[in-house]
Length: 430
Ligand SMILES: Cc1cc2nc3c(=O)[nH]c(=O)nc-3n(C[C@H](O)[C@H](O)[C@H](O)COP(=O)(O)OP(=O)(O)OC[C@H]3O[C@@H](n4cnc5c(N)ncnc54)[C@H](O)[C@@H]3O)c2cc1C
Image (cartoon, rainbow, N blue to C red; front, side, top):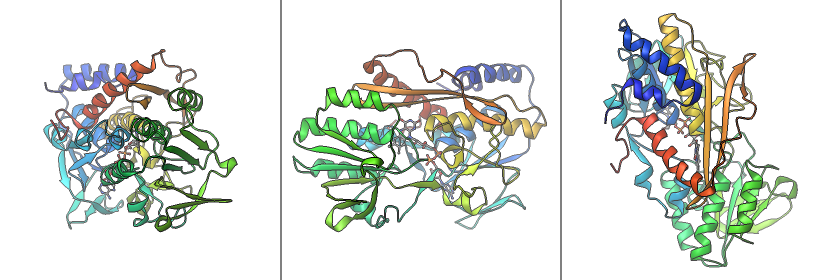
């Protein structure tokens, strides 16, 4: 089934969808004049891909090019399920076929630098790409050296699995190989971080796997924070599903891991050393390095944007979306990245046409599995007021759903957001 511009826009959530639907109907009645502008999108994750796709749907005459070094993208959403054998990696791997089918030119390369004055990007392969508008969506980079001793070599022994792919497979293999009675540690960094509830979904699914396969094993969560999303719901579920198996150690109880010794499989907190069987170290994060090199990041490390257009506050003609940008209180999630991408696309078309940028309205939902058939969700709706992104009061209170429904909703959400972001028939396994 083809994804028409109309049906694509219909899937945009909430009021944004309604607004976009009106836009689409207007467009359907009045043929658009050709828009000869070139839009270059750097990074083909949820943010970049969704933006490229939305640009093509909004204005089929636009010349949209997307550059990413990986022609297959492994989604982080659902990668925790891969860790414990509920899915395989192929089922969360997408190709660039859907984007190309929608008329996006996909370039299999890495952008090595951007000349924002001359408006062109240099690719690692040597090509130069000129643009009228640039979208930078490089996701995160891991801040190696934090905790002390945690570098790329250490990550082969103590995987982070915070960028899905080979790291997911290493951690999955370690969990399978671990002895019964072993200890799995998850180290959570201080925020801001990608997917704040992700470590706690991970702890839940790992405990579910251990309960069946290694019932004497334990999960320790070392946390550099003092609170985590949906804490009460998670902890209540752990008491019922995994009594005595998961222990959360907050920063105030010496929970921050400050150093790792991979050869000795030991984690150090300020006051203790912990011998561990499987160590999942999630290091602190920052935007992809290209964003920093291009002058898009602030002193705080992330990239400030204008919340209506996602245009960089620092560099004209450049938009930053997804995990790399500062869009608080929106979380760093695929759901938020996709909502930002669609608004950014609407804004770019309006800016190129010289028309008014439509008012944004962002929806986000994050699902976490507590066990294979039980889940929870975190909702948020956001609007721009007084120049800031603000959460709409009460928007976190979603319609009540049972844990079993939440798990089914998670599955539907995943299929929908992948199609929304990467186009149709895009799973590597399809
Ligand atoms: C375990 C886990 C579970 C998660 N679960 C959920 C969930 O259930 N729901 C949810 O909403 N979110 C979830 N997330 C968060 C979600 O994965 C991220 O928020 C999302 O991937 C951000 O999208 P992005 O496009 O900004 O970055 P990314 O997805 O990281 O994409 C960035 C892309 O940019 C490319 N790139 C980088 N530098 C360059 C360059 N110089 N040139 C060209 N290309 C470049 C990279 O190759 C990559 O493809 C989860 C995350 C994790 C770790």
